[in-house]
Length: 379
Image (tube, rainbow, N blue to C red):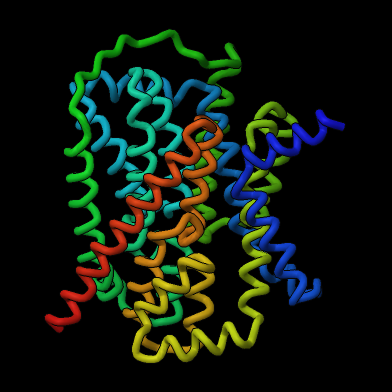
């Protein structure tokens, strides 16, 4: 009995965000009984795509791809500042094309591995915090960078050039701030000797390398809406069951469960008339701030879906929901991806990471709100 209680306690400590999300979801059922609308809450496409991406990244890691890339990178840089700049701006720029979710799933574990390789793990917290900010705000620039942008872009009918200009000032300022934040980190010499590869599979390495490259490319094709996520999911699942079942044990199912629980909580919250009426009143003339505030509670993608039904001020809503991705841990669901990877690798740093994440995100949000206020005065 005591061992069972201890296991539950350990699980709750390890998966605190999942437990909180489940608690909120269960609480929301009290005011909104389960019905057929529940299935509509869950973004199945996102869940299936996350599963496939995690499988591809686990495959790359077992192949030693991250280590080989890290060897090359560490051979090219001379100090920690140069290293951190590269590791932070990779998700910043790539997220503009492959979305913030994909960028974080790809580059957060890569960054951790690189720091481990050169024995600079003390920089892991500032790195992951800055990578998360970089991915969330880098992705805000383009219509395909994140889900809410894709939705609002299609709803607004805006030209691509106009959309880029809406977010360009905030993206530029974020890039400058990330660069300055890295320069404030202690400059240390990077010394590294290439290590023996930890790759597996031996003679079948080429087959698995091609398979996981194709899998990752198919994920990118699916992000661009050219391949249905459901078709991709069943193809990936079939491949793993037949060819590489061990990867199935590398998937972070707790992260997928966290997303499901938050989808249920947010869906139920959006069906509360008082909640919807409150945001309808809050929105008029304050679209950007309403986007920021609502994103802190229900995350920016549901906020964009909810608020778009009350206004046609598309520029303000785009700016608000993108800036709203900063702040709380759930302001952008993509932030949960980096958080989960961080605490999974370094469980003892969970509290410290959360503190630095909150301070960094709130600080960046306040700076960008200052930019918004300045631009509003100029206009």
